[in-house]
Image (cartoon, rainbow, N blue to C red):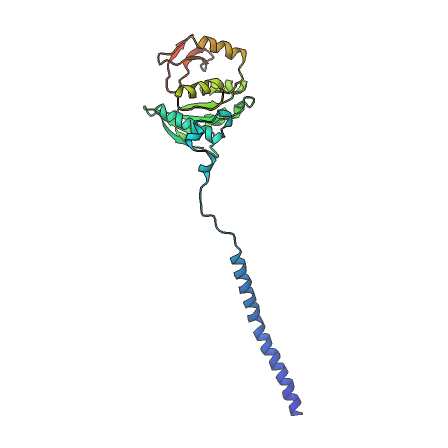
Length: 244
């Protein structure tokens, strides 16, 4: 009888010991699974900035036709152009979100101009919203003046908005002409075609006979009151005007 009792007690004791040992095994399993999860974590981003890869080297950009450039490359081309014109250039939105301003250029007098660059196809015109964004964003950079440079053109409402808020704009053939006269931009193919209206064509014929004292052609512009005047096409480098 005593042997049976001791046998039962032994079984109970073994059960208790087994129960005490079981949680520790679970902990070991959990710890091993945790290690596996830690080992399979994705590597942390080292913070390497690849924004520079969005532009080809300057020597390549200087040989590209405008219709073969990315937006970032067009902005870079303008940076090189303005620096050679004597401006200090700050690249604000190269290859990323710009908030309405791509470049901030400062002349020798310290006057700053906010520049928005748009490398568009001929049929893709700059919308009025772009003008409004530039007008609002230039204040964030303490700029007095603003300039839109586009390879295409502005829509009618965008032109009206630009004239109202004194936003200057270079478009189509004027941009191509300025870059070619610079001398460092040598595209490998023929001059790109630009969309021009009859009004633009007649205006360009008149402009070709009117020269600014700096040697650049004069272009027809409108002031805030709607009155037309001749302005130097080399703006903002030259700010001379003539009455019509």
